[in-house]
Image (cartoon, rainbow over the protein chains, first blue to last red):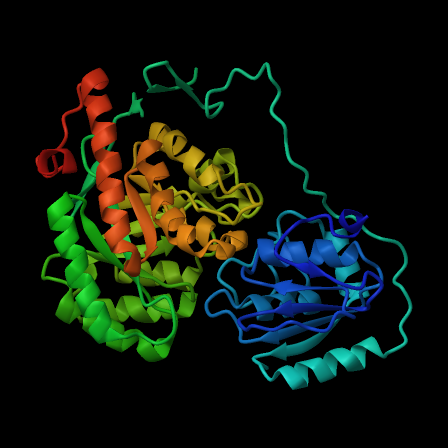
Length: 187
Length: 299
């Protein structure tokens, strides 16, 4: 059932499935209270953000996304997440006005992003590392009376791929390797 | 252990040879400096000396990779490079922030260090400003990171090199050539566990056979992101260092092995692996190891 709500596995920790708060932790050690729905670190401004979007819209109870801790230098992942929520993506799937190095959203579609933007209110605590201050903000959000955002939205489900047994590829379809280890381009 | 039918390009960066058929040149080892906290230059100086000693002993060429994350340290780090990396030895600079990359290229030019610089890296996030800056201040060599946010498979990595995967107007190879970069290395972009981490290794022979360019990766990043390994404190360091054997085993040419603190593990492990590979590739493919190969030095 847990997987139903969070279809893209990762480093996150799940708590109260009906909690209305998710917490993104940038560069700091912090464990929020167990009343939040889910929390975890964010490292990259592309796949990292995609996982967050996918795993939040799959749980319609989540309405607040608290982003806390020191910004990831260079990647600027926290600010890029905020930019996604504020601006969306352009035609090339780049997060509009994101400051990160490679802020592309490639694995989830625009509809999912729009759902994220509608479902979530971001609480910007980037560069805030005072745990009491973060706890306080999370508690404020937890005590707000806010309705569930409709149905669960599954943007992507990451499942292991199983190669078929009659697949003749050795390492890759582009190359052929003989029994001694000679690599040739196929075809 | 492989041999490729595609002609393999060997590039020479300030006397360090990268690339070729497996078994010719030893694996080149990039050791990372200044990843964490503020730079400790005294300690870095000792580690740099130790790395060159190990390189001399094993035959595996060493290239220091300097991670520059804050503009407040950039001048100090470049001064450290100018003073401590022996004259004519190459080094690489690893910077994420596109604006910082541009500033550092200018400083490297002012300090006359570009001829020894390996730029780490060009990827699909390259900006117009960064490209202009690279055209103006062109480094000796560039690492192209074949990261494709949509497709982490070998095909996805080739797509990024070939046509930019709709993220850039042209492929990374063409971008590098248009800038005027003659010495190109390909990093197969190791991803976190769960994001097709093994594709970074599987892509090595595919990219070598496709382009014949020196290819490698920072496979230790996968180890770093394997959080469960934190519970196995003793094993973790060994796994981190030994993960690099996958690179030469799959025909790769260089390993960006992470924290320089691991040199005493990484150099002998890779030298051992290079000897193993050389014995096979000479036996079956007639590939003779270079004069400075670990097989010629260590018995």
